[in-house]
Length: 225
Image (cartoon, rainbow, N blue to C red; front, side, top):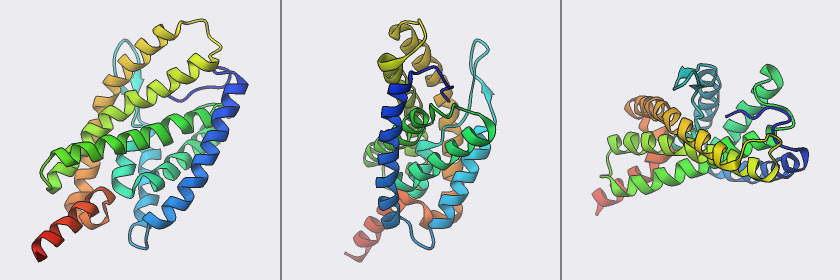
């Protein structure tokens, strides 16, 4: 999923770098409203956890491997704005310190994983949460499914970028089939890790979980009525 230098041309990379920079600026404003003294430390822990787990690869198929993207996981735990910032910091550190993803492709990678992965994943989470009973276990289930769906969504972002400014000779149809097919399998691993992580936090400190706090408030209102 980490795009290297030279795979997408510089004009396209520049456009997505500008879009990512604008999105980060908006996320900074949004995170100020969604984070408080209790939840801010969780954002830091979430970024650290995603950074560490992204370094671990698991086999998928035909010699390929995958790793946690963490967009849906972070969005459920700390909200989409803070999640975007957390993923952006992780991708910056990986690019500069470990050459995981090219410097010229940094805006592309942030757009795919920190924006598409986070916001599409959170959108699926909200939709699934509405369909399930308002219980703590439903939050874990919704987060797992959102994690699964967020991965091929982020991969589709790369296909769009490749269609606009790809430098390789593979057809867009070939890239689409390869990326989405592989990342559906990676999404299964994402779903498992997301479910385990969200379930662990829900079991110990559900009051800190952004995706649960809305449900918790509704339950309190209903009890008071």
